[in-house]
Amino acid sequence: MTDYVKIEKGLGPEGRIAVVRFDRSDGINALSPEALRQLTAAARSFEDDAATSVVVLTGSSGAFSAGFDLKDAEGRSRKEMDLGTLRRHLKLGPRLTHAWQEMEQITIGAIEGFCVGGGVALAVALDFRIMGRNAHLRVPEIGLGMNMSWQSIPRMLHLIGPARTKQAVILADQRISADEAYEWGLVEQVTDPGHAFDAAMELARKVAAQPPLSVAMTKLTVNRLAHALDDLASHMDVDQFALASLSEDHKEGVEAFLARRKPRFRGL
Image (cartoon, rainbow, N blue to C red; front, top):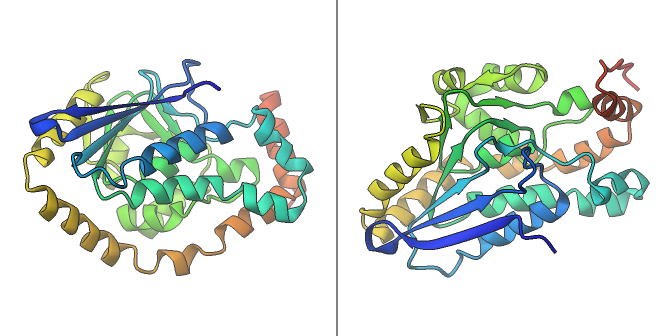
């Protein structure tokens, strides 16, 4: 089985920084079910790691992630699944974002190139995001006849407010530039192209120099206060996604995407 994720530990002050690199070496870094599993396992590998205070997550030089892999064989098999099997399979994404959000370590995303769909869902589950100036974000789910899932809506709402969240999600074809993402509050820093990782490591070194226990407890407090109602607000998003994936509009959206044509949605 191909390893899409590599972990390097023991970096920075007192060796308290780790780097997680997600790179499928294909130029797009799509999130296949296996990639989701590996990224989830990477986050969980830090559960008992008292030596690491900060984790930097980065993609390839040209892509943080293109989102869910619509061409992956396992992913495409969803259309043949019964509803119960589909619901279980759809939990791969929420497990991923939950694992990264719940990490005790501070997490920083270094984003170059494009960050699309599930890539955005992963990025907003992190504590901080840094983008190269020529990078962009996009949330195409509605354009594929689906809803934005993985508990991403409340996370985006906390960061950018209701109107910007609707703008980012509903206007599925809109690219959000790095400067726009910074203006909206979706990312914390914009760098020259190719330097997002360097800036992420600089921030990581500053965090790693702080008292580890105080940092971890502060993160926990802030997250519990900020996300206290997230489960209540989005407990149905997997079922909504499953329902939407059974619609004719979803079938049309995916077929149009693969055929590189404009979809024709009919509300069916």
